[in-house]
Length: 335
Image 1 (cartoon, one colour):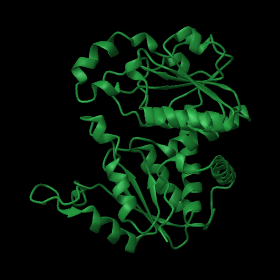
Image 2 (tube, rainbow, N blue to C red; image 1 turned 180 degrees about the vertical axis):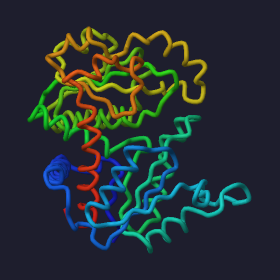
Image 3 (cartoon, rainbow, N blue to C red; image 1 turned 135 degrees about the vertical axis):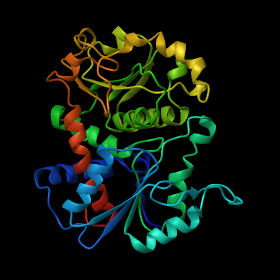
Image 4 (cartoon, rainbow, N blue to C red; image 1 turned 180 degrees about the horizontal axis):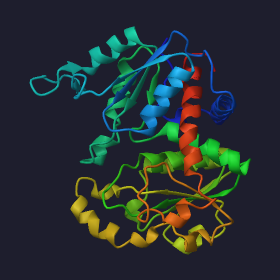
C-alpha cells in the first residue's frame, strides 16, 4: 500500500487538520515524547533554511528520533528529475534511485525545493516533491515548494491561540513590496488554510496580475463553500483593512511576469505603499498581524507593527516546531 504523504493540506480534510492542530497544541504543552523512538527522517534542502531546518531537526530529536540533513548539489550528489533523460550533464543520480534508497534507510523524507522562477507553467508542476512522492516507499513531507503546508498549520495554530474560533473572522492576505520577486508558496498556503478554517478571506493585491494561480483560487473558493467562509479579491487597501481581524503579509511575484522580472519591477516599485503600517492596522478590528518570516523591516512592515502586541509572527514561528512534530507523529501512526 502506498504511504500517505503530507504534500498539501488540500489532501487533508478539515477534521484531519483540526486533529493535527490538537496534537500540536498537546506537544506545545508537553514537548517530549517517544513517537519517533528508533525512527529517522531525511531532510533534503535544495534551498536555504533557518526555521524549517531547526524546527524539524529539534522536533525529531524531542520525539526520540534522528534527522539526517542533506543538501543535494552541495554535500550530496546533484539529482536528476527528468524521466528518460540522458544524464551526461551535472546531475549524478536519478530521483528513481535516490528516493528508493533513502526509503530503505529512513522512515520519513522531507523536501524543500523552491521554483526556478523562469516559467510558471513548469514551476506549477511541483516536479521535485512529486517525484519524491512517486518513488519513495515512506511518507514524504513538503518543507516548502510552491506551497508551504507546515507554515499553514503553524499559522492556524497561532490564530486559534489568540482568537479561539476562526469561523467568519475577516482575514486579509495582503501583498507587500519587496525588492526581489518571491515565491508564491506562503501566499498560496495562507489562502488555503484560511478558507479551510471557514474565515472570510480577502486577497489584497495591487493589480489583477498579482492574483494567485487559479488552482489555488479555485481551492480557496471550494474550501470557503465547504466550511462556511468566503473569498474575494480586492485592490482597495482601505476597504480590505477595514474591520479585519487578521492581517497576513507576504510578498510574491506576479505570475504573468515569471522569468521577465525587469518588466514587472516598475509595478512593484510603484506599490511600495502596500507596506503594513500603523495607519492601516488602525483600520482593523484590533486585528492581529503576522508574517511567515524572514521579514524585511520597514519594507514589508514597519518597526511599529512588528514590535506591537498585535504581531504574532514569533508565536507562529515557534509553532512550526509543534505542528511538524504532529505531522511526523501522524505519518508514523503515532499521532
